[in-house]
Every structure is written in C-alpha cells, then in structure tokens.
Length: 165
Image (cartoon, rainbow, N blue to C red):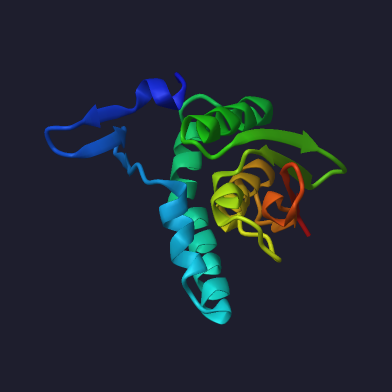
C-alpha cells in the first residue's frame, strides 16, 4: 500500500480527486473554519460536533480501507494513518500508546487550529472524529476521545486522548 499522495488520482477531466472509490476535495482550511467562526456559539458547537461525527462515520471508511489493504498490525496501521494525515494536510501526527486501552495522538500544525485563530475551546473536531474511527479499529470497540490541548488556545500543538471503557 503506497502513501496516499502517490495513490491519489487527479481526474481533472471529470473534476475529481480519488483514492480508489473514495472522493476527496481540496479546500482551504480558513474557508472551512470560517464557516464555524461565522456561527453563533451554540450553533458553532453543534456544527463542530456534526463535523466530528461525519468524519468518524464517513472518514472512518478510509481508515477501514487502509487497515484492510495491508496495514493489518496496529503499528503499521497507525503509521499509515499518520502518513495519510500528512498527505491530506491534516498536520503531523504521532501516536503513542499508554496504559492498556489508551491511545494518545499529538498533532503538530493542525490546519483546523491554525485556521481558527485564537479560541477559548478546542476546534479540532475533525481530527477527534478520525481518532474515534481509528481507535475503534485498534481496540475493537469505541473509545471516548477528548482533545486535551489545542494549538488554537496558545499551545504549540494539539493533543488527543482516546480511552476505551
């Protein structure tokens, strides 16, 4: 299984970018995050949570495909996920295992945090949704995922913790 950027097919004749049957789009991060910034606070939180759920469910299909096409063991799978995140512009991901049933993800240069600017709450809901999909594949059961540190709040990087019950 090659890296994602090597597998992407840029079909300009039909106006699409594909990895097998999974269609991607290219969009500026500030355009996406500007949508959330423009919403009233209560609506913003609901919209961010909807993005998280959509990435978990729809983006999780990519994670399942990566796992099925050769990244069978956990370390190889997490490496493919980190490489794919970088290929898609989702920052530099590093996974660390902790106690059993825990997975820590550190993200340097999150496009979501960067485009959101200074904020009082974490904004990397898309990454949290993907981590939910990833941890379900790693542990075989859903996990609680929390962004414990977000660069939009003045830190150097974002940190997520996934914990199975």
